[in-house]
Length: 572
Image 1 (tube, rainbow, N blue to C red):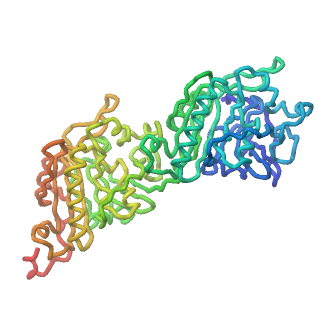
Image 2 (image 1 turned 90 degrees about the vertical axis):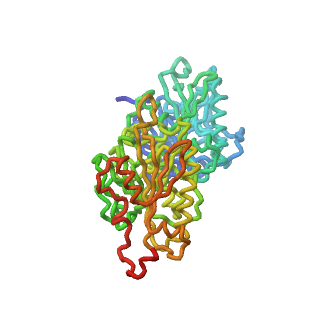
Image 3 (image 1 turned 120 degrees about the vertical axis):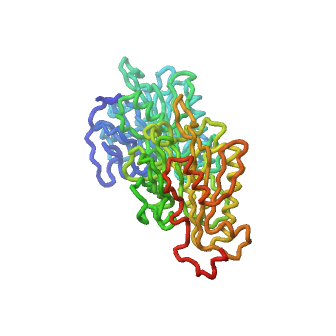
């Protein structure tokens, strides 16, 4: 299928220090591409990549259409700036589009008599001078650059398109908005790609169509290292976000998710389904784990060490439940038994780490691709932006399930304040580890109990402490788009096992070792947390969960594998 940009073929071959135009991007310009990769899906043999050079340095990258005589897009690095425009820069052109120059650099517009040699392949000033209602609109705007020469390099006709004079205001305000956002909240490199769509309209000169007029302008940025304490409305637009606007007088500019822009461009142009602006949608820099769906937990690499005696709770009947070894940063972190029909965990099992109990709020939420067989590499992944979650939302909860529910919070089963290592904490922020908890219960009785257990195990557990936290359900669900989406717990329960503990602990604490449990209703009222023995909890759960009579949370009921001498039994 033909692209909306129909081009002529130019034979250009890269040579050492030679050319700035070719059918593939010059390696010299890879710094302007996130991950070193240009937008995927535009690999047409007649499109020309222009590595924009000025005064001996590369400045940005443009994909250019020599027939339409406009750029398809320009890709550049954003640099913090005060937003001032450079008014004294001379307009330039790219000689190599016409094989006129071997310098590899953009050049000032030549005297009028020489322009005939280059205007066949690119726009010239005369194309804009007589056009009524259009101005030269930069795709890489000079106000997104700080160095004077970087600013000057944006004044090449290979970086501009005919922009409706009545649309310059809305688009300039969007450029200003992005400049302020990245100035204030981007903490690392920011890559921007700005492009156009066309529909056959053109600026005419001497009765001939000369320069294609864009139908839409679009732009997207990528900044993986950003301030996670930014205001919520700004944080929601990082690490990547996008915008588009129709090139007509007074048209608004809409900000939208990167995925939504890509979907729009797939429908508005002839780009293939594989079209992607940024490598992996701007997420490769986020640490990944391997949250692996496994047959069993009988190996260290399958999270065996998260379980007391390497043994998971036994007695679950439902064969549809999924065993997840939650891995992060190349290490197993904890275990989850997941119900893909209710889209909540049945339980998470983890080892408690001594901690001060502070909570982290700057981790991205993640999901488990393998539950939907979307990704075979086993990686726990940060949530994609926009609509990509539709690929896996049948098998698990997504952020949209929680976004419009006022009553419920995302309640961790393995809470981050029971972990000390930053990676252990980050791994708890997956929706396969959370359930909908009534807000008053989540921030009240249950949070207080998590803190109570943290203090108890910090002070009196002398060895490893194993915790299993789970839920029961009674048929209530969160609905979205008139569909049942996420099971709502009726009860939340937890149990810990620590066989090496301080036997000089106060009596009211010592009776809660080596194992103890708790149970509470997930309710706005009557939600007190009741502590009880593990055996009593198991008896209760046998009547509330799909388990058999052999149901047991801890192997051998958390009896130490090295029993105390008989004369010390009275101390237990």
